[in-house]
Amino acid sequence: MVSIYRRRGVRGASTCSKSLTLAALMALAVLGQPRPVQAANPALLRLLQVLRDKGSLSAQEYEDIRAVADQPDTPPAPPTPVPSPAPPTPAPTPALQPPAVPTSVSAEVSKALTGKWYERISLRGYTQFRRQDVTSERGAVLEVPADRTVSPNESFGIRRGRFIFSGDISDHLSLYAQSDFNASTGAADFSLQMRDLYGDIFLNQAKTFRVRLGQSKVPYGWVNLQSSQNRAPLERPDALNSAVEGERDLGASLMWASSTARQRFRDLVAQGLKGSGDYGVAAVGLYSGQGLNRSDQNGKAHVLARASYPFKTASGQFLEVGVQGYRGRFVSPTQSLTSSGATFTPAQRADGVLDTRVAVSAVIYPQPFGLEAEWTFGTGPELTADLRAIESRSLHGGYVQVARRGRTAAGTWYPFARWNYFDGARKFARNAPRNQVNELDFGVEFARWADVELTGVYTRTLRRTRTSTFPYALTRDANRVGLQVQWNY
Image (cartoon, rainbow, N blue to C red; front, side, top):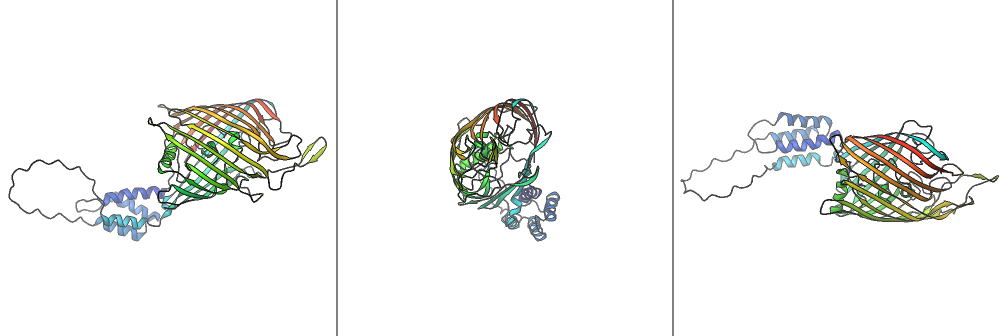
């Protein structure tokens, strides 16, 4: 997302200095309008003093603006007496025009703000606090790789604690940095982790073409691009997320989107329709392929292309369709196994196993009824049946979700139901074991206020592989209940 995308509009994202700067602009417009000869409004001048004291305006800039604002307007020249003419033909009354801001005041405002890119930077984020309980299961202990709160040893957990620093540095450069205060590196229970760190370089004045460099979400799968802050189910579906666990990687991409499409991408988030943000109508790129915060293992980049367009019907209904695909070689992490009295480590090509996938996406945004459907298929790394090697094997899966968005006097309600299916392999797990998932989610998200949301979910797991430990057994007929409180800032 190139600019600062917010759920349900601006949600307290701006920093104090940014808010004060916007207020100052309005104040200066009022101060600069024609008025009788008198001192400037004391309250507005006090606002300028606050900006000066906070460092947003220097002392000299403050004095320059005040001096211009305090200058009396030149009184109009007295009319020249003329003989009384004959009654004129009535003419239409001209429309009232808003008073123009004097050029001198506008020039001083522009001068004061020139080069102050830090006034356009915002700080925002969200936190998700959860509790989940597995009430019954058969087979292996239920494991959801992306969610550590699904565990008999967990009581409460913070799933995500995100802080986002973003803004337009200039007309041609935008930056975005996101950290997670509850990430895992695999060696610790909790850690501070970089999620995103990238710059968008705009190639034209209309900002329709841009190059993105750094660590960002890989544009594969609409649900992967949608922020967890906006998603109603607690976790992403396995099939799409298996391509890019963590959703992010290091890379470079070229994106294009028309001005109309970019505005629609913004509206889909600002209007609370759970949009995915602006990742372009068309995108092509290269990325490392080894995953979030992991170094490359073979020096060969993955190649990716995506096309997705947000349509808007005459009735105002939004819908989006897209297709995406990638190709590369992935080096799966390995560890030794012991089977039939022998201990060995699965072998794979030194430069990785072929990983190539295609996915199709279709989204009807909730106005009030919504539908999401995505399906992926292709080949990827998978542990062979004899456990001796990791080779490229076929995979397929996806999800279908229905929802309704409603508003009452109590708040905003978002009931939903989702089918989550995958038959492939979890390439990011050690030894890339085959992963079978077949689940149903039923839940409701409720927001009494825009900055606090409550989500309750019941999940029926028909089948799910425990991929973290050998012998990679199945969990069947599991029932679990999850509760999450999310606050946005």
